Length: 148
Image (cartoon, rainbow, N blue to C red; front, side, top):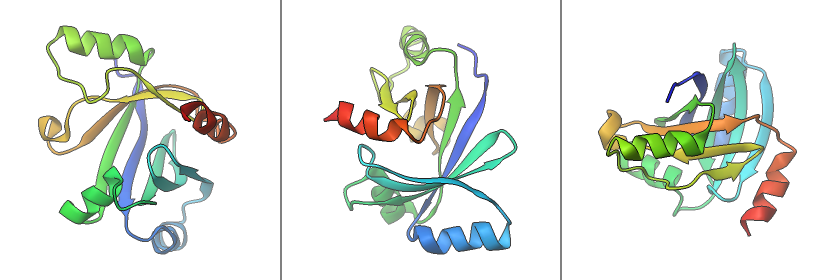
């Protein structure tokens, strides 16, 4: 498996609107898009810094992984996503190496296939995701309908 690029970084926040003000007004980031990912129970503001996306993510439910993270560790760096050629192949390769992955099959969201791989404690406390496909806000609705 070859990691092609960092696709995006996620920062878990308690209040997305407050975080947006700081990132947009203080740092001058331009909002690329806002979306809600019902399957992950999050509301997201997405920006680009060069070719890498930065996402501010707020929990939409107290039982979401983001809410649990904030409860345990506070706001902060939550996830790194690496782009690969094929998520299914990457998962299979990790399993042949004896890696216990969080996801056994890819998930689908916004035109992408993605999978959470190592448990955070195995990669220095960072949730790690592998991703293929092209990000498309218009795909969110179709992906959510497919999940139900």
